[in-house]
Image (cartoon, rainbow, N blue to C red; front, side):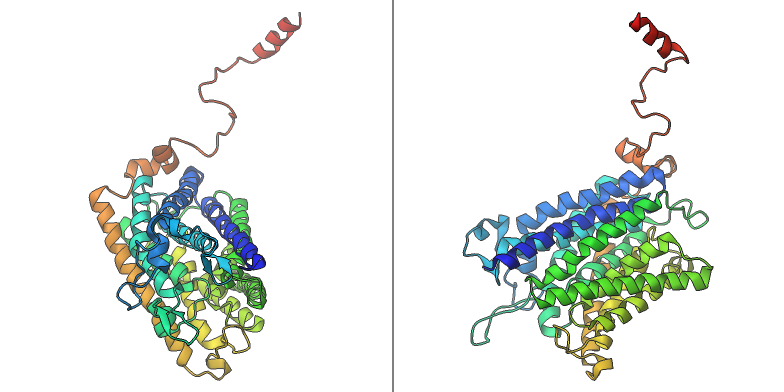
Length: 445
């Protein structure tokens, strides 16, 4: 065990957990004031549901010994409850296996929470938690196995434990989750948006963000946590982590500028919401590519993706699906761009050691990236559609039209985020003007 590597992974795990509350603020600021608590709760609920499932059998399903040796699913019972991983001899590389377990748990939590932005203002909270649990089990855990579980080998190079098919058979590069996290969540978001249908006011009144400072705060927390998300995936405090951190910084910066440039040319103004959205788009794009491109390549990946995502968020109006907070336009499109651009901008000078098309590598890596991306997209969309329809049929998924008009915070949670003009209880007796002063004078006498 290397204590420096262990400390870095533990800190990175904490940073990645912070991303989910950051996402809650990012999403919460973009909805109307009467729906902000529901957005916060959907993210917090994801932590509760996925956190428990991960410890019970999620880690085993994602990283356990492959069932059947074909790279589709780990054995869910192998590490059930994690009791077998408590010993000091349980290591994953140079870190305790439980450090890796905790780090990957945060990925699973965030991926589920990302989906919620597509169905803002109209999904019942209980059915959302049910969908989150089913989706984690049926979609995320298997896909995480495909992408993140690598073959184990002995000293002679013989495979002793089979990993996921995308990581090992296709050899697609996804350093920190462009496919497993962002394409996966974006495809699920599209399926949910189609099943739940449009908000009653959309598209005539798409709704304006009620709190842009919340949006910027959320984007800042996401950017901060993303250094743990990406650089922590090196699982060591080494050169790879340093390269990944710098690439994460510069790609995100370029994506923000790319998004703002599109806004300036298209709309005549660069907006705060655009800057925050460009930040997230850049973070999404560099996630799969951060170990395989140089800093100059990272600038290209970020700038291109920022511009493309800025244009993509308007597709929902053309095709008529109500993706409330642009999960499809940012995470699905951004994940696809980042994954595919590896095949163009990858350089053997970077830690991954692979050349893309623009560095003399031909189309070899590009087709691998495309297969991995399309496989995850199709699997996630189809299974998410089935799960959403199942939840809708069994318990109902959408709030009533009346509840939607009243506001989902009040109807689902019996709360309001803001009490204007009254900082105390709604039952407080109103004191007539001057009465308080008379009582004070009487007490002094």
